[in-house]
Length: 473
Image (cartoon, rainbow, N blue to C red; front, side, top):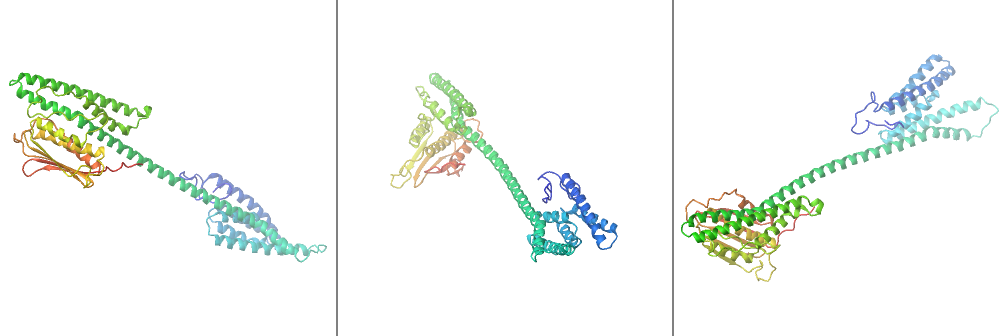
């Protein structure tokens, strides 16, 4: 309940009520008590006068007036009862303040409009009849006053309108305003809840994006640094085998291992520098999401600077480094033959077969694959051949590339290792297959890997010719 008399079921939204009984606030209780005291005094005076005119005990009139005036204490809880009491005492010409305050409270409450209209009409009828008979008695008691016939009806209607219309209209306005404020508060609370949900979802998306970026960065580092370090371990194992047989060749290959180690350190420093720059992107205005692409560019530049192998070539059974990538660009399908040729030079029996025209269209006139598609297919073949070197040394391998309508398929299959169950002794965390799967599925493709019935291993991937656009917003 506000200070103006508008009904309230509670105090401020979300705050506990501080008033006694049905009052939401203490000032509301003070206001109602004050109105009840004033109304009680008014009704007591009018009740005493009515008792004197009706030849009744004056004390009875005073007591009745005090009881009737005190009804205003419950106007917020039972506004209909207050108006009914005011209508009941109209014939006794008492309860003017009681009637006006009761009509205002009734109009401002949540009582149905038809009940408000009914009680307002009853109050007006009762007030007109009471005022008419009171004025008529006054006119009769004044013989010198002879008003026209229309005087009494017009005056009684005017008095009733003045006593009922302003409080009812003001109460309707206050009630409508209160309901509007309540609806706005509910809408504001709803918007606040929605904003909270959006903030939670934004935090979840940010966390997902951070995890995705970490995964992409780890995948890039695995493709570049871990791959090169793996080759260094394989070269070191080969040096142990040829150190006594061919010291000159072993010395040259040792130099190659040193060059590869220095190159790996250089690439690692450059990648860490990119990550630090990405972390400070708020100052440089560089988006952190560009870190993986910049890592790939740094790796490409580092690979372009890789020195040629020492004369004599790599030791038998040792894979050569991956082909250098052009500056700022990743590998493409045209370099698969070179990649396979380097594995052959390292002693692996590899067969490469290509089916269908390049571009993915049956007539061979369609556009080339997107750079992301070609890089993904190249990485799958590179990682698969690396796994053959690491886990199945001496095994025969077959690389099949098929250009189809709207997609490109690749399969790398190797037979059982010529050394049985032994491998090159390289540590493996199983991230190679995971990285291949992530690359292929990120482009909307399909990836399958697993052992073959012959005891070998097979890796298959199908990638759409056009990579899907990244989701925005």
